[in-house]
Structures are given as C-alpha cells and as structure tokens.
Image (cartoon, rainbow, N blue to C red; front, side, top):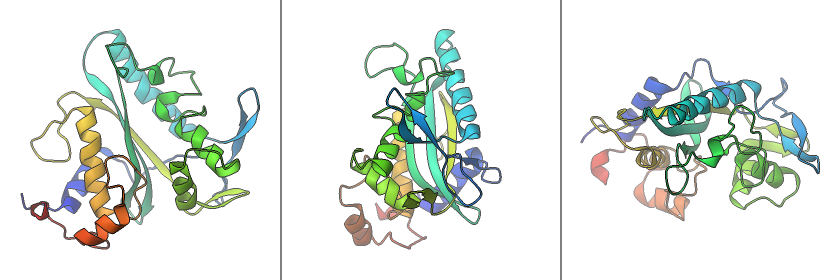
Length: 240
C-alpha cells in the first residue's frame, strides 16, 4: 500500500470524529481550570468529568448494554479517544476500548454494568481507583496514582494547584459495530484489533504526544527517532 499513515488517520477521523463540535473531557472554567468534586466515603478530591462527555459516554455505553440484553450482536463494545486540537487537526493523546464482554466468558463487562448511574467505573472513565479519572486525580493531587498517569498530568496540566490545563482536552467515543471498516481500507477489525491499529497509526504520527503505554515500544522516543517518525508527515506503509 502506498497510502500514508497520515491519510489513513485523517480518513478515519473524517468518518467518525466531529472535530467541529468537540466534547470537553473535563468540566472547566473559561481559563482552563478543571472543576473538582469530593468523591467516595473519604471525599477525596477528584477531577470532574465534563457533563457533556459524561452524557455521551453513558449514551454510547447504554447502546452496547441494550445490544447485550437483547442478544442482537450488533456491537462489540466502545472505542474511545482523548485528544487535543492543533487548529482543526485531531491530535490523539490516548486511545482505548471497553469491550462488551468481561475478560472471560460471555457476561457483560463489569465496566458497563449500570452504565446510567455507575460513577466509579463508567466504561473505564470512572472516579474509582484503577479507572482513568480516579487514577489521574490521584496522580495530580496525592502523588500516589499509577506511574503512567504522571505522564498524563505532565502532558495535560500546566499546574495542579489549581488544576489548569495546558490546552483544551476533548473526548470521542463510538459504539463499534460488528463488520465496520477500520482505518485500513477493506478491513473490518474486531474491537481489540481496531484499538491496536489506531494506536500504531497514532504512534507513528504523534510519537511524542501519544500517552498510550500498551501497543507501543517500551522506549517510544528512541524508537520514533530511529524510524525517523518525529516531525515527519510523509511516512508510508511501505516503510514497514
């Protein structure tokens, strides 16, 4: 194939992401300061999900749960992205998925149970420990979150007291329908495959900005420089 990874990325974004009307990941004030809430029995300080983001995530997750309850077999789960914008260019910061089924068997994924009301898990973006908002908040305010979220804090926040963003951060989510064409033409990846396809493309285009730690080399900066990906827009699939 001679299509560039740039062309593949732009085509996928054009098909699925409404960058003209982006959804804020966080609830913020006009100057980019993120609101916080007291969460859990301890009332720990926690970054506040954007209200529109939360509505969209619950709606998308609800479609997957309804599909599961009715045994229709339409959706495999959710694919999502945290991103920023350079002008109208979508810059992926984190890509992931939440499958319909649990780690084994055919039970509904616990991250989707009670998706309309569950604040702690909420399709991986919950306020609880081991979930994105909970662990990011721990890294930002208590210095006790998993190490990977230290990178999120450094990349996204100009300060943590108060928690002020470097730039607006947005969220996209899509219920992934069985048989949908992925970023590569004439391919219809299953959800897990789709996740790694998108991470692979995003890493090549944005090796210094993508925050994923799975599906990328363990030494991404050195690897990107070796392959000549940094600040290079004409990388072709034939380079592999």
